[in-house]
Length: 237
Ligand SMILES: Nc1ncnc2c1ncn2[C@@H]1O[C@H](COP(=O)(O)OP(=O)(O)O)[C@@H](O)[C@H]1O
Ligand SMILES: [Mg+2]
Image (cartoon, rainbow, N blue to C red):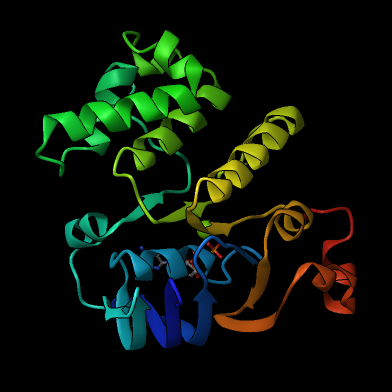
């Protein structure tokens, strides 16, 4: 079975075409990385899956079902979670309240509590700081909160837009370990990353997006490709 299959996707914003016919597929329990220069359309791929950009043609199939026109809340219900670029959290709410917002579509209180204790096991610092206002969290803790909030829906597919942005090398390393762990837990993950080297290392499959098209794709040995070597020397643009 394929978890997510994107076929010949054309998408953009109000008449501006950004994605010009792309194909991406994600298998269950797989980390797929999306790399490429600024403005290539990486975030737009994620936004298209989550139905917050304009899809003009092509299809997005999740677990065998066409989801291209579904509303965002239906997608969340289906098990797709999204952590946006910039890890937006509600600074004036507590850590626990931020997490509970992530579960607002879940009516069953027991399920919410169960997911909450799962997130607290995964991120013990969030448990320790559950009653504190989120604005007092460090950068790394904010990232954990943003991830934790997405996990409150108990998703099958996690969409991560540049989760390592602005984190120190040490925190980036921890974050990538956490993401690998989430795959061990059974999730499928689509990750947009500026840090191409890290992304290729952690991913089962990587797609290079350039100017709204897939320029290259492959497994870990993609790192040896001339295109990658030339452009990404040193790991960052
Ligand atoms: N909400 C929006 N409205 C109009 N244009 C947008 C919007 N978001 C992004 N774009 C444009 O779409 C293109 C691709 O953006 P994006 O997908 O964010 O690229 P990336 O994530 O690869 O840096 C850019 O030219 C950007 O200016
Ligand atoms: Mg982006």
